[in-house]
Length: 148
View 1 (tube, rainbow, N blue to C red):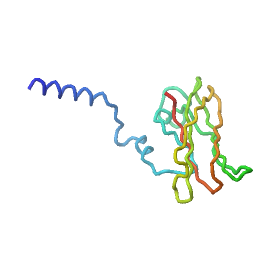
View 2 (tube, rainbow, N blue to C red):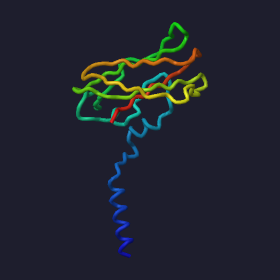
View 3 (cartoon, helix red, strand yellow):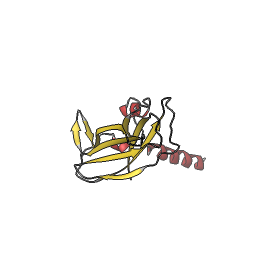
View 4 (cartoon, rainbow, N blue to C red):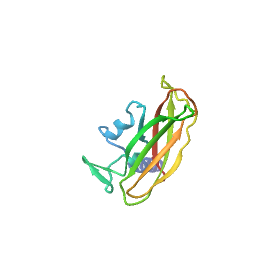
């Protein structure tokens, strides 16, 4: 009986220590939204939530934002994808970025896209660029996450 009581108390402490988001949170909606193409997304929750530092806009605080992104053909017929990211904080921000390419049917063409590390200087912008490995028309999805 005493062992059962200790087990229940320990389980209660473990569960109460877990952080959960409310069911009506927009963060949950953002995480479960349909996949979009030709876009930049912050896959790291810490980059897209409200913070006390950064720039304020419509009730949110941003650490990083996307200034521009797109794709353009290269001389060899492949596609170059780029994103210009802006750091709104007073410290250098270390991130990882990767691009997933998709064909016209929405099927990924890269087996395992690799994360590339980058540092965006404080209150500055930085460009991320990568090339596709095929000459076929492609859609892209650039993913950004924080380096912990």
